[in-house]
Amino acid sequence: MLRVFPAGPCRCERITDDGPPGRLGNAPDSLASWQDSAYIRAILIGFAGRTKEKEWAENPLFSFVKRPRPKTSRKQARVTELLRRIEDIVAPTIVGMGYELVRVSMSKGGGTLQIMVEPADGRAMDVEGCATVARALSAVLDVEDPIPSSYTLEVSSPGIDRPLTRPKDYARWAGHLARLETAEPIEGRRRFKGTLLGLEGDVVKLRLDDGQETDVPLSAVTRAKLEMTDALIEEHRLAQQGAAQAH
Image (cartoon, rainbow, N blue to C red; front, side, top):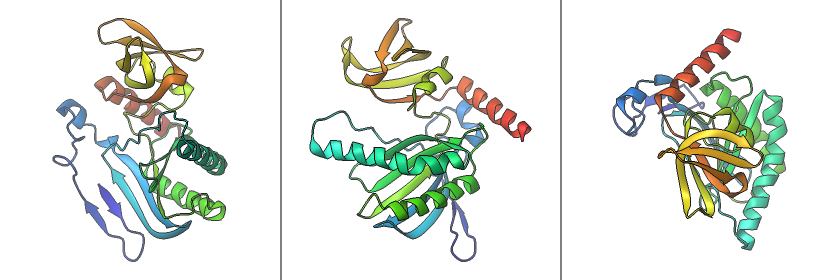
């Protein structure tokens, strides 16, 4: 993990969280060789809407926040409403800067607000770009002040084995391996792993590992993400290469 502290002289530290430098956690060696798979995060620690400390980080770890399952409790309803409000607050700024909003989520306990973005033109996300977005969102959130208590604002890129959060993601990443979880059992199961076949209407088409095809209602999916494979890494590399040449 590369940390850059903006206050005072620039200081960098290389920290490996799991295994030797360059490895993607416990991923196979064939996957670990892809050096540019780091996830970019810009973290701003806010207290009652005011920034106390800033940190820019390049983190090779995947940080996934489980979406809250549908519940009738007032607390869950308040969290859902808060996230929708935050989306409305930050989306215009993100789009105006040339990025797309991928996900807004709160960590368990509500201590961290996580906003996931990616460049709209497909180019690679870098530390500078992520930090720029983080500064802009911090300013917007300071003004709107949607969270009255202390919190951490974390702005990140989706990474290669990205979460699937929008209907277009299921069409865009058709042909790749993915994991899905649903709120309620579908045909006796809540967890699915297989190749995405696309989206038909509001139904996710999936070919399971045993070759059987199944339909999963999009409205039932509580979380979904791509699985790291060599094919996914290669497509990611080619896409970023093409975006770089276009610039």
